[in-house]
Length: 287
Length: 287
Image 1 (tube, rainbow over the protein chains, first blue to last red):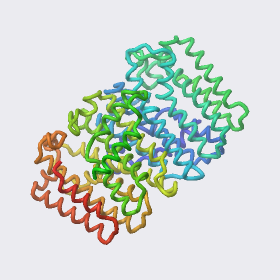
Image 2: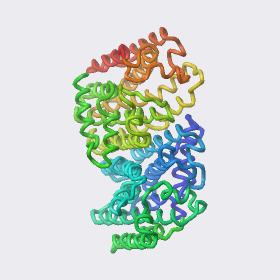
Image 3: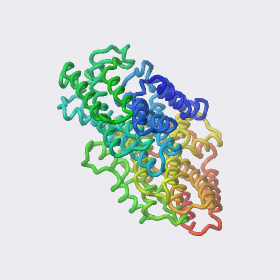
Image 4: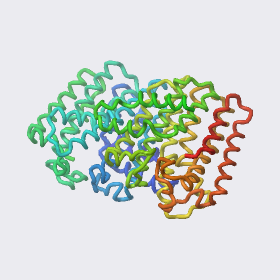
């Protein structure tokens, strides 16, 4: 994990415009938003999925960076005053606090564009037709029927008590779609049989949901210092969480059931050890 | 022009998610931001450029829609309170006024994703490798060294008096990059020789700048009712314009010089009549 995380840091540092390139303040803020941050769960998933399809690391680092740029942009926009209005992210002031709101808006916009630019620019698949499929997959995962749509559902759900199926619909969009894209794009970098693709799809759905369930449990139990972001925020903002809907003990059981489902999806596949370990990491993590 | 504009309206209406598809409020707002709006200058340019490369209209409508979605998203974000804080656009309340700020933010984010999704999804070039080039071109034009970068330069220039070269750098990014992308993408839909590509590149640079010079003159002279957006806004916000930097008479001369340069770029090319007419339209328009 450490090796992939270090590789991602240098890949992102290389793919992002240099801090002194004009407009320098925008590029500095884009680097601030993306570098030295987070667990890189999506890149880890992309690299692990690539082991199943024998994908080359030079390809995996590109798709992982594209997914991570989409993720980083979504955090910057999500933290804005008109959204969650948060001041702390990954233990640092959020982008609009460190810079300003307008710059934060543009940081997100430019990171999204850069994600698609690098997917168009670098060869990440055996043929260009497959690579266009990958562009489409990432765009769909980021858009109104994926991540951005999940944010909208989240907005409209604030202050309402959601049922369990409603909560699941929200998270399948808000976090699940991009996690699924990370896993599938990692697979697409190599030779992806229908069987492996199907397994990755099922795995990613369980892991994506597990990720959110555990996030809710940690948000409920951990401190701001441990999380590096404001703890207990969702419940303060009147948002439904897995803990508010089913209680912490049942949420923990659910996370474990989803971990078992993720493992089951990988049954009988060669090279799936890292994906299995990542399912464990995602469910058993403490931050 | 009317035929292309009508075709774009139906293409965009078809490519945007239906208003009743969940999350419905987001999809309604995306349609509100994109449909029934504007002169469709970028689509007109893409279709006209496609005449030089014998491009099929079924391809042109896709790239034109992708460019127009990027343009529409940029207007929605540009109108937000943290940016230009405007309440009127194309004669209607801006998206954050009609809906709310958070929805407007997500409308822009989702429109950008949708632009790349349709470029990945539909066949718009003879081979997939060329189409990946087109993805990269649009992304670069939208990103931090294109349109979003121009917005950042604009932000940082507010309240300062810019020199003419500084003003040009801002507009080459802010509006020029996407206009250039519209022209080149139209060309790429067909058979694009290096000679035609070079001509389109030179044409688009002159036309892109002319567009902005005329915008500044109209903003200075026209009324809000004619423009469909708040008139005189730039000077009120302490922004440099071609009128503030060189005066209206000289700005009008410059627009005409740029029109002549655009025509000159097309010299000797077959099928360039519409591009020449569009250069005239862009410079001689009254709104």
